[in-house]
Length: 101
Image (cartoon, rainbow, N blue to C red; front, side, top):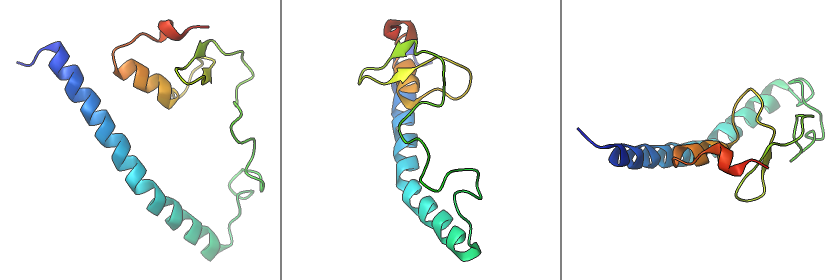
């Protein structure tokens, strides 16, 4: 049976592969969505977004940030999906508490 370190290395390699696969598929998925939106006359407002694209780069949370990522990213630590940088930190075996503000 593989040891902990070996399994963690395999998990990290798989996460890197999964992220690369997601990035590779993203452009075609976006193009498909845009084509269907154009075909049916759907706007971002129809989807619940604003026509200008919303608050790009701003946090949706009104809670003060509790964690600061390696590149200055901020996260309040609330419920819901964790930001990519948090998932990367956790997958590498580090503790999120190391990034507490």
